[in-house]
Image (cartoon, rainbow, N blue to C red):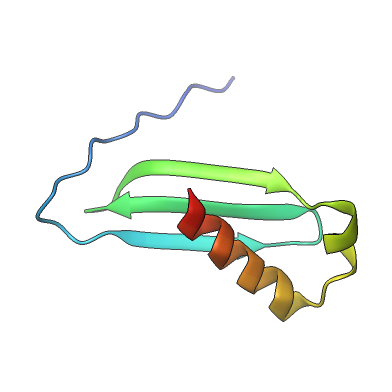
Length: 68
């Protein structure tokens, strides 16, 4: 059994935290504020990205996170 997550609305005066990660399957990112999830996203790697080194995938996850 799985339930949908509850997302919080951002508060303009508070700092944001971005978490991102990469694996050999995909990229993921979470935008949080005051320990509450504001937004999250993930995607599978494209065919050419499957050949990337770990540090390149991690950088790709950062770029992906900043675009969402």
